[in-house]
Length: 355
Image (cartoon, rainbow, N blue to C red; front, side, top):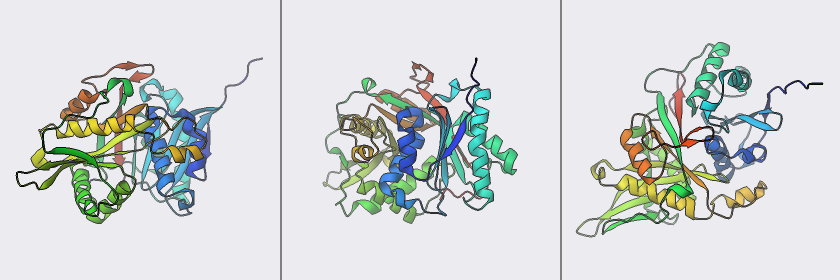
């Protein structure tokens, strides 16, 4: 007798650790937005930080024992992911699985248990399906114009990158910002504010105070690297910065890459990208202690894969990242369920300030 096909079901977890224990075995590079964000939240804030009234959500859609969709909200931004390349997911398969979190979120917001949507990010096919289904429930659609950020998400497996640090000109140095460096915070805060404005999208405009809070966390966890240049008088100038983050059991992301305008077109962005990628793929997993508490084995070793995001229209950045080893349309390769890059988007909803 044939068994009826299992229906997808939605599970809401009461903490990031519960969510991660259930989902970390599906740690593909497509899941980095959700899993990396959740693990970073657990380390920085902890389970106790998810208090009633805070905009935190940990949702997963399952069919049997298989994870289909994950949705995480740790601030005003929601992230939506699937373990497989979005282009391998059919519309008929996707719709009932996106309908579940869309309906749940609409109910939570309508009841006042969650604040209104401000923005959502993830693979474009997933986000488009979510916004369509959510609009049918709520009548609310994303804001058009500059609150939409089109990006490409790519990755770099260990075997595609030169694991030696980049060769730099004389008097040029890349180093990790030390938590004891009392001069670093205001300088990094300004760079982050400028980087956010340069990137654009829903969160383009942040205050210096907001940037300082973000920079302080990154400095505390030794996430930042800076590129410095000494002038003829020996004065150190910061020419750019980069940061790692969203680290999981296998993957990590190179992010917040920014070159000061007067130092652009000198190879600094490529050097910072290369240095940050080598660091992710060479050093022991910086999240190994947190992962051990979640019962994830084998995290003493370095990561297998690094991720990076480029704006869809920024072909220059894509070429730079390709030279390091990432797969964009200018240097792509085929994988089992899609290409080495994925079309992604961040969309803002009415009233979004990106804060």
